[in-house]
Image (tube, rainbow, N blue to C red; front, top):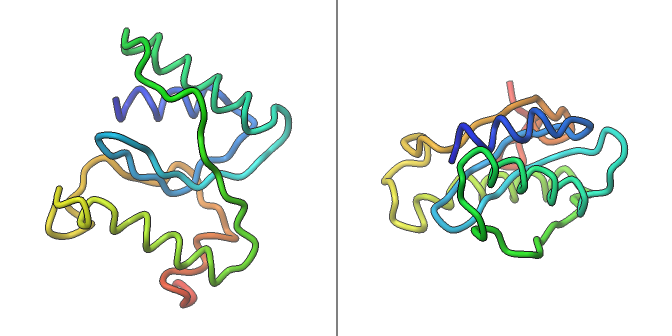
Length: 120
C-alpha cells in the first residue's frame, strides 16, 4: 500500500505532499495546494489510483477529514502528533522505527518547525 500511495500522490500532481504516516486503518498527511482541483476531487482521484494499482476495491471511506493549519505553532504540534501515532497505537516503540512514513516534498511552512522549534 505504501508504494501505491506514493505513486498515486506523485501522479495526482498539482498538490504537494509533505510529511505523511500510513497506518493500518488511516493516513495522516500534510499537503499544500498547487492549483485545481479542490481537495475533495484530489483525494478522490488518488484514492481511485491506489485502488486500481492494488486491485483493492471498497477500502476507502467515502469522506475524509482535513484541517487547515494557519499557525506555525499548530503545524509543529500536529506534526508531532502525526509522527507519534504509530507509538500511541502500540505498533512501534519509537516513531523512527515505523517504516510507512516519509516526506515527498519539503513544505517550508511546515518543516521549518519541529515541536514548535525552528529546525536546523
